Length: 235
Image 1 (tube, helix red, strand yellow):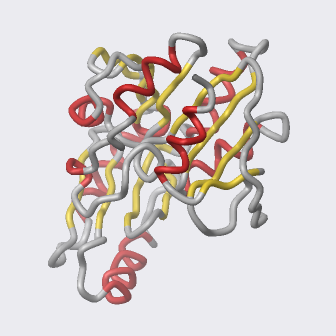
Image 2 (spheres, rainbow, N blue to C red):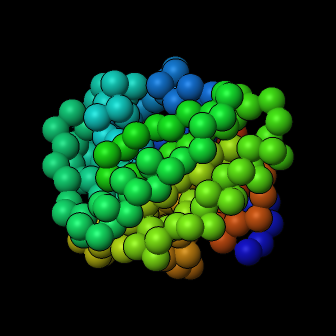
């Protein structure tokens, strides 16, 4: 991990991989109120006219399509889903992982200002609005100690998510990049799951961390507005 402060370069023949929450939209306590930056609806179609572009998200694509009503190629649930917003198809998930998801969801602790986002093939426990964050995290740690091997624990910004072990944003973007070898990947994201993609794409890609914190990315942008400003340089 490093602490890059260098702004990302503008490169020829880009292949865009863009996270959503914290990258194209501000983070919100209620994820369904995390609407895109005001310029995003105009910006994405223009970028797609000249370059391949994918949204890479941990969200269910059905939910993201409500916030971003564009026909944009997307990978959802960290790789479980793939398709176009509004026209999603899903990859198969191992039965053992499905059963493990159901078991952990049923055992999740019930706490004030803590809620579960059901993503069908994964789920997230949000506690951004909780009053006593340390107490919530202690109870979550106790619950997570029984996580089956078929699942991976993802810790984000006041959210914990469980997803199948065999699926990740990193696997998804490497496969997509292989289909576009004549283009240079640009991956922009802000959270823990994006680190998998940063590492998987390697040094040839333009990997960009949004916000503060240690990262495997080579470059950094401070906030959502700066992401939009950077992407506009490609128009």
